[in-house]
Length: 134
Image (cartoon, rainbow, N blue to C red; front, side, top):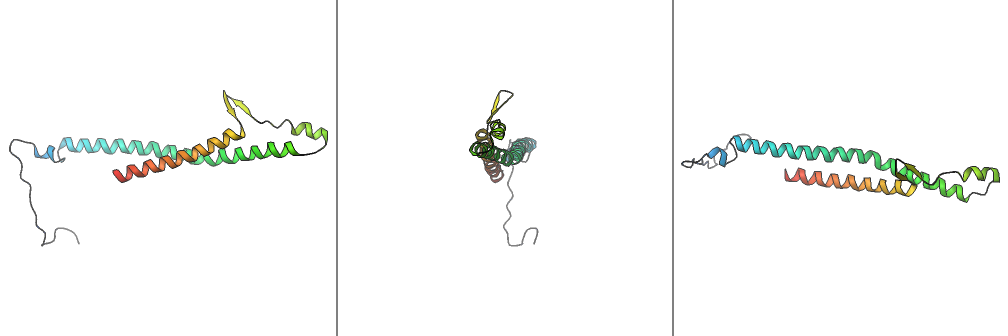
């Protein structure tokens, strides 16, 4: 059912004398511009949060799996009892890399993966709050 039912009481608001009723009730040019600015601002914030969330969703499992695999390789190869010639090769498995001044190790990859999961959770929470308040 659309429209106004016959049983509803319809009251029209009178314009106050000497004032701009359109600007006061938010339907004038200033009201429209304010609403447009608010929608644009929250749209940009939501876009940034969603973009960050998507990147973190891609990186989190990659970092976690790479860190856990690297950690397992380092610890399993350290405990193997093999021929001394092969043992020399296994001892060369790196435990950390320095890339551009950044220390890469199994524990740092795992930590960064967990932090990326936390970023995803924070972005989803903030996006939900914005959606509820908008």
